Image (cartoon, rainbow, N blue to C red; front, side, top):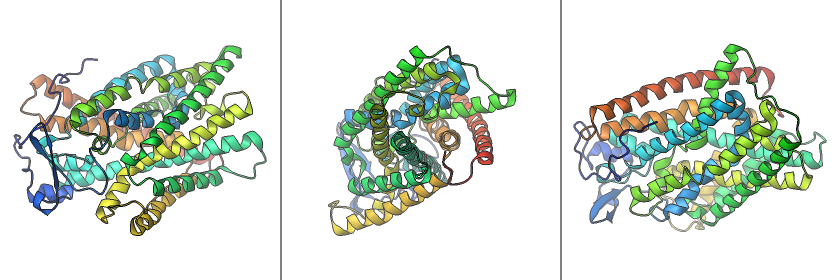
Length: 473
């Protein structure tokens, strides 16, 4: 696929609003929308190559991290324990040809869409450290609220999935030693939620992860290497597998559409500006380095474990690969506990925009150990994760959540908004062919979002007829 417009500006730093109909920086509308004030009221200003770029107020650290650290933040999201489900959630519905081609296309398209958003980070002479700030700056107040709503739904549902996944990992480890059916999945989800809450209290903001990113990478390598080795052994020893796509024609259509939502879910965070806010100057160039790292080196482990799982187990591949593999109990236990621990770190990344919003709104600044700041994190973050944990235990249908999240929010945030915002921001610099290309993307992904949402809701309805709330899956 040829992506038009990639040669368009390595960095998109514009001082002044050249486009018609876009409010000037510093206008009451923009300041209201972004939740910031003029520089004399406390808004900070940074300088990059003698060009001054305004930075909105925030309680969290920004411009502190290297592109390499940010690349690992992005890679943590791609290689989270969710990768253990892609053999069953992506490859089984799509088969070898659809799965392989789909993953490669999703990688390329996701890199392209994320690059569009990254290049707008300093658009109009100010840092857009939140996705909603960027949308509000380009479109106005209503778009700010709509984007914040979409992003909240996206991140909340991702975190629901993470807690379900952590609970599944704990349960899988438990049954290796005691298959007595006393402890059930909702109990393990509750334990996972408590562990995530403790971590959220201990780590005040995204930049503070630092050493935890190294642990996250280690944990990811542990469960990916173990899953790969055991699946390879099972595949060599197993008889020929069934790689057919089963079901009626109608059900295959719906599962294929749902799997396409899983494809985009696998590569995208829905919070790129928030992650880009942590990178050092020059922010656009460094963010592009981080994205190239994510979509080259970062995707290799995910590809490997996804393809080996489907190769080894065919249409019987599970949405949690460690349930398929056979091997020494201690080795499987190590993989499961690593998946559990990595999930705690990954969830913190996707919960950080909500934490930043609350911390900034209530002025939580200064030492993380100050009594007021510490008690605020205990109460507010604990409550947020308590609600997330309850929803996770109530509806533990992991694959369906990935599909619905991709349909309702990942498609709009990552593909529809990215292309349209770039089109609006660069309308005077794009050729007619480039404009048509962006409009084609907007229309295509709009249709895909609608179709994927219908397919995901159908899957949830089907699962709900088989599984009751607080189910022990």
